[in-house]
Image (cartoon, rainbow, N blue to C red; front, side, top):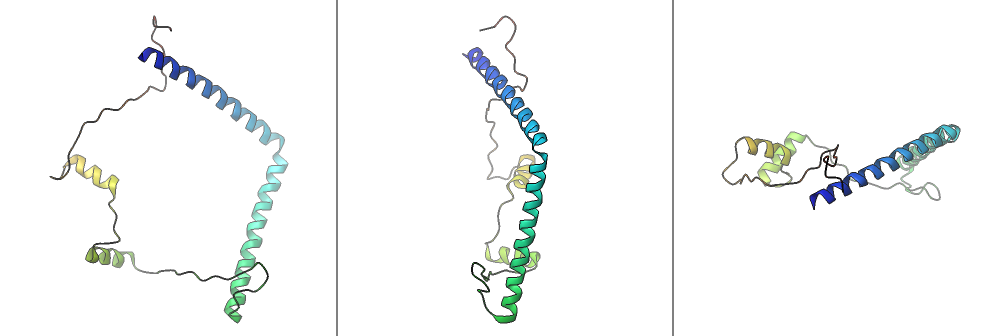
Length: 142
C-alpha cells in the first residue's frame, strides 16, 4: 500500500515540476516579448497612484479650508477615528483591565517546551513527512 502511494507521490511531483518549469519558461518568454508593455503598465500604475494621491490631498485641503466634504462629483472627504497613545501605557491599561492582550503563542510555546508550567501537557504526536527527493526503492518498481 505504501509503495503504491509513494509511486503516486513521485509521479504527481514529477508532473507538477514539469508543468511548473514550463510555466516559468512561458512566463519568462512572455515577459521578454512584452517588456515595453510591462514597463508602460508600471509607469501608468505609478502615475495613476500619484494622481489619486494628489486628488485626495487636494480634497482634504479643500475640506480643511471650507468644511465641504463633497468638493467635486465622485470626490468625498470622510472622517476616520485614529488613536494615538504610548504603547507602554496601553499595555499597562490592558494588564489592569485584563483585556486588549493576546498570547504570544510562539514565545509561550518556546518557554513551555523548555520548562512546562503545571497546566501544560507535553504530548508526542505522530505526523507523516515525505522526503523531497522521494524515490522508489530498487527492486520495488510497481
